[in-house]
Length: 359
Image 1 (tube, helix red, strand yellow):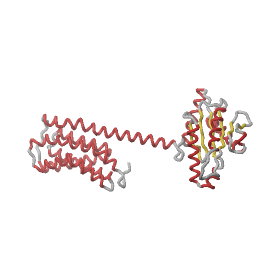
Image 2 (image 1 turned 90 degrees about the vertical axis):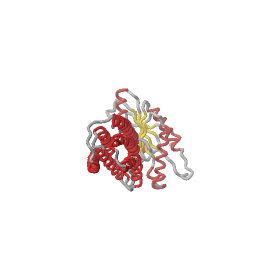
Image 3 (image 1 turned 60 degrees about the vertical axis):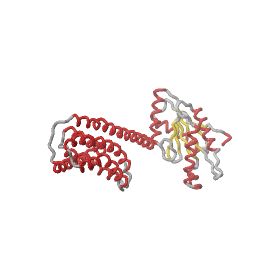
Image 4 (image 1 turned 135 degrees about the vertical axis):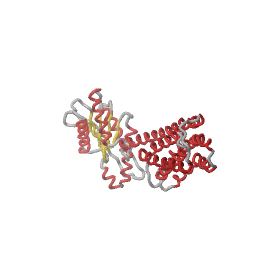
């Protein structure tokens, strides 16, 4: 929540419903206690205003404020001040007083924690003192049946309203947490896994290969001469090529494959349950698809891919060694002419599988 520059309106909106319900049903708790004392007309008018008009006034005060969050916190203090006033006017009659003040204390804690609770308690005490000085009410420790029945809605309905608002906030926080978690794991430009997240999955997959004896292949992919694309056509076109590449990876690969942006113009792929030959065929189709891309606005633009592939083997001691083999295969693809797929083997030298018609 942003507390400044008018961006705390959502806070005021969340308080609006519990305040309307709480003050509305609290009206009857106070009414049941004050009615036998036959107070003046202005007291009834003030009670009606506090119970049914103030919630809407408070929301408008927050909505029209330049700082709705701060305005709403002041409104909560006013709520507490009013609650204390009615507690004092009722002569601190135990049941309605505890009902009204405890509900407001719960609201203050839910909205502002310990600090707002303390400020609210001080406001309640001040309001009660003012009412006692005005009315000098007699203290009555007992509770009439009318007071008991009048307080029941407050004890039942208001906690449900606060619980509903708290649940809605928890759902929104969970959704925001999920979004933030996804953002922390993905690359902002391409939407693929970022470097760190992909490497975490690589370590997990390495463990799966060890324990489940799974045949998995990984690949590192480099867009050939990407710097020249940026220099010749500009970074906007370069970003477009990266997005084209990421879209092609998503389309050409399987749902089970784990695709990430390794950094710059490099991409990385984990292909579970995939042999070297199968991986070669999959990535060769990807390479051909990118080679065939044609932009009518940029007819001179050609996209080539250098790809290094490494399959899991028992000789690998950790995920870093596995990644290093794919990196060596990628280096071999680039040093031997680029725009090809090279597969790493456990015995030197490395060899390349590629389409001779494209050489």
